[in-house]
Length: 149
Image (cartoon, rainbow, N blue to C red; front, side, top):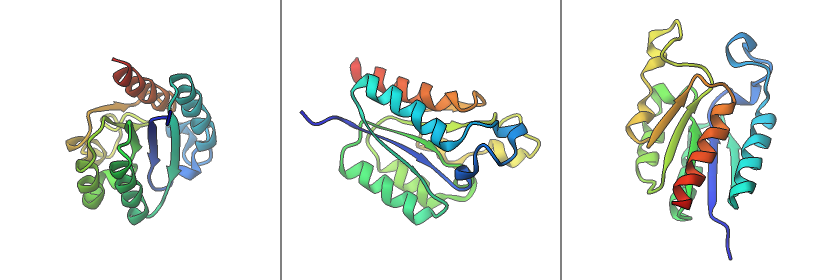
């Protein structure tokens, strides 16, 4: 039996987690987050596709792949694509699966007011914001529970 595939997609600058602004994003690395997500996916019997990119066309390619492979779900931290990534939003809207948007910091409590207005919420099933890196694991667990029901 083929495992259902769960995509965890990360946008610009997230490869710098653990180094970049630890007072906001903490010291957990993207590799640490991948390990947390992989543990949750394995426990649920899901195949995990975990990616990070600084290039919007690459993100769109993964979203098209998720759509054509009938992904079980998508967890996405669009990072800066949240605010100007209309092409990413359009690609997300074409996906017919649960989509959880994740942000490590609370985008509604940041100093820059523009951060609170993510375009991606228009396509997301739900959003986890401000729970740190553990928000990713919660998103994977949520999608696994949806699939089990």
